[in-house]
Length: 188
Image: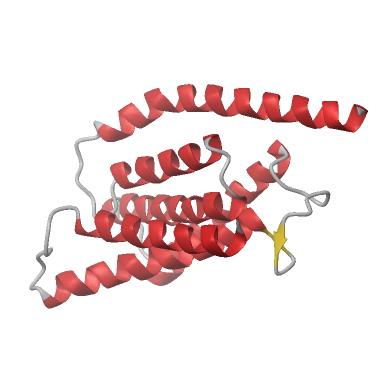
């Protein structure tokens, strides 16, 4: 009985924390949206993936589904930081730069999840022995990178033009939602 009360209190505390975090993110997201620079991977994409994580968590969906959007957020943030570095003429191998930024963002995100108590050794919800949120994050990151490079290839073959407005964002979210639906059907 005491354990059940603790679990209920933890759920209530986590729910309040997510609501407060969501309210605190609104001003940050507003600033990101009004930034005047136009980038290939823009703040709007990053804000949208963060909102996807918030929505799935608040609805109580499976951690693997949340992880898909966390992985997309990590990749989106890494590509965004990479664009900032390119604008400031910070050189180096582009693949190494993107890879190292992505790994750093992934490690920082996972560490923040660990210290926030979202996962840890006591968690029994695992896929192939791996935390569900990490499994979903890896899947979401792979999908996001694949769609980003596929969209760039489409632009390259179309003489630098997109097929439709917000092509990369639309393709990315379409495939992420498909990935999340697959996880939902398999792991429900």
